Image (cartoon, rainbow, N blue to C red; front, side):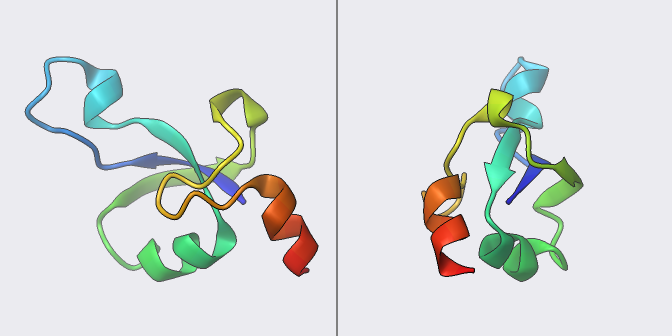
Length: 66
């Protein structure tokens, strides 16, 4: 799991809605890494949440699959 800045609601006046920082699981990251939806990525940080922004998989569920 990674913490990513993703493309959000660009019509919002809040920058946190335009480019939110969210957790993204490894599977979704692999699918989205070639698209423009992920702007930046870094190591997982639980401060931003514990479940994938796209599919809802938790960090624990992802660890169990390994």
